[in-house]
Length: 142
Image (cartoon, rainbow, N blue to C red):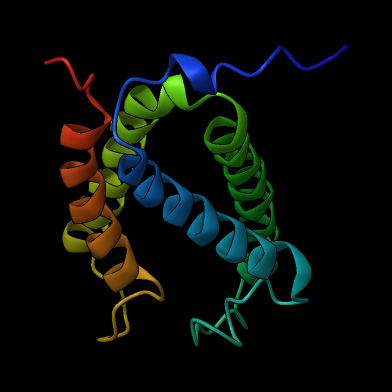
């Protein structure tokens, strides 16, 4: 068998702590599929960016590659939630690092547009929920 046996029975944290990780997986999957499936990778149709300049096609290709990694990340998170909940805490920490860097990058990198990038508000909410879930993912005996 390719997949290791499930380890959910070893998870000692609270079940609700897995919900933010599932939401992170859902956001990554939806965002990734937008980048992969849409012909403009969502840069024009969703983000409203102007890609009709030198390097615009490269931006679309880069967004599609980013989307592929987002989909793969979402599938790994789904695998964790469904079969290996004992890995919830380290993957929550990973999600916290990822979401923190996204928010930090959004704050530090100015754009020509005065609008926030799509999904940033959901990212901030997921960051807060993931921080709270770290408490619930710890062992109940602590």
